[in-house]
Image 1: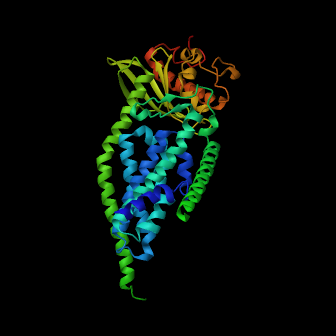
Image 2 (image 1 turned 45 degrees about the vertical axis):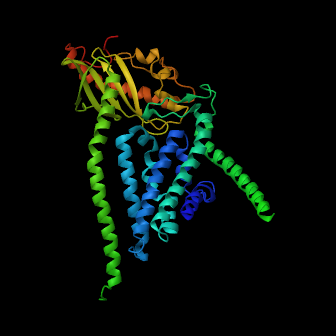
Image 3 (image 1 turned 30 degrees about the horizontal axis):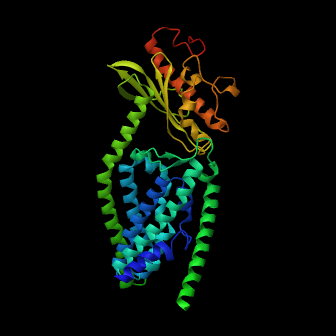
Length: 214
Length: 205
């Protein structure tokens, strides 16, 4: 059981897809403009990741090596289409905002990467925990960026029109820094957060190393 | 001809099987979600129609008239107790970032009754403000109509554009004008008089 939790935590901290592996940058930069969008994108990707990891792990002894990539893509695409349809039926507004980025989960390198690097070589339960950890790590990364970008760029916080939530106005209208919800703001925010996290990790690892030495 | 080996057959079989199973699952999902998606779309359309033409309770889609502007995509006639109450025109003029999909309601008297921007891809914080009432509800747009087509201040009209978003605002105004042209061809026969259908130039104030 301890091993499962280590796999889970690895996705969130040790190998966080956004901040440690720097994978899946396209949806990260594009959908972290508002907290609701980030959460929607993150949970959609998590669902696909968990399901595809489990199915691919189940089929890992059946799928021949030569055709493994097309098989993975078909499995991933199936779950992405399910998410796409269900989201269009239950949250049309969110579906419209996320738009092209939902179908593009198919080619999200985190998902294919985990299928190839983890699920195809590990047991079902470990693959499940890996998918959950990686998915939540991705979601947390998106949330962290959107928590910075939405208030600064839009001046509001937690707007979710689909669920009738109007959000809070943090910065007066016309005083917000528009750049933060535009593409340059995405790169700048990501860069600064990455730098901060790298600094933190470096500091923590020296502290741990010292403790281990004593 | 070399024989197909057992291994090769297995490759084909496994991939076909996976694809077939996934197709089956997707067919079921589609069957379950399709009515809900259609329903949500219909509801969104009806809400937008009611917002654009507040006086009407019932809407029927009509065929596009000949001579409609290139950006016009749908026309609805609005009815109140089976009496024609006006026209709602869906137009999609090109803005700065892409098509601006919007609906324009025009009363039977030829006045602009309401405008709703359905979707757009204008720059957030600049062109995206065309959705806001500050722009759409200004007097120059609310009071426009047949014989009083709206135009931006810098194009010689009275509509105040949003700062740094002239292209987006101009697109909205172009959409309204195209909607008015379509509405005219629908409303003119109802008005009855030969002058009313004579053309835009001599329609009364």
